[in-house]
Length: 345
Image (cartoon, rainbow, N blue to C red; front, side, top):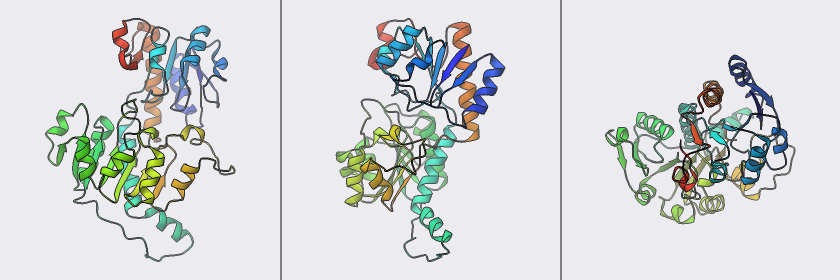
């Protein structure tokens, strides 16, 4: 089987080449992202392997279907970049639901610690032999209340990390975890109560029509003054303009961002020689109380290996049995299976 692999980075190749060779899957690696202009590169392939910033809209799906492409293999958990309703009945869509939830949860905590203890500032100073402590005062995490929005695998791991620091946890999820409900130090509440009662808020939920701009002007106004916001999930969960306004008004005390709603134009590439044309992102990065990393929370050796292994196993499972436990959208079933744009097999 031959797969066109889009948005290739150097760290992708070793694991995918190894698992592909072991299982009879050949990957042709393209550095370009999949979109309406590049979809022609998929002609002659059995499937495509795509990442978070590839575009799998209706037009792309139609071209893939026209080419006889059978599978869209997402090497990520999120699928907001895929038009699921349009894919129904045309093409299989599979994903990697969990590659290393520990990697993302640990990165969220790393961002929080770096922010609250001014590690990034201290590092820059010490490189210039400036060892002054002025302006580096932080605060203890012990005893603070953290609001965790989304308590899937990553959210639950982040909760456990916070409990290890002696923090109190307010949780919000439309489908509460029974495991967390019975955990000491954790309390499920409505969203407004979480916003009002949290010193720190961390986002661990998927991006849907319902959650887009979940943290916007109104939500920020409901937060404690000086709240620390962490987002390692999806950029569009946060209204970037509202976030910037909240920081300028001091309503938000600090922001830790591994994702950004317009990141597809900038992230994963070296733009150091280019003029930053996104004024909002430029302002956010310039703020002393904002830390931005380039969607790297997933980037550990363990996660990269799990992504490659699961993706190849998804492909093999579909080719041999026509079914896959990680399938989102499939060729068959009824319209009921695809309501709300989510086609779960």
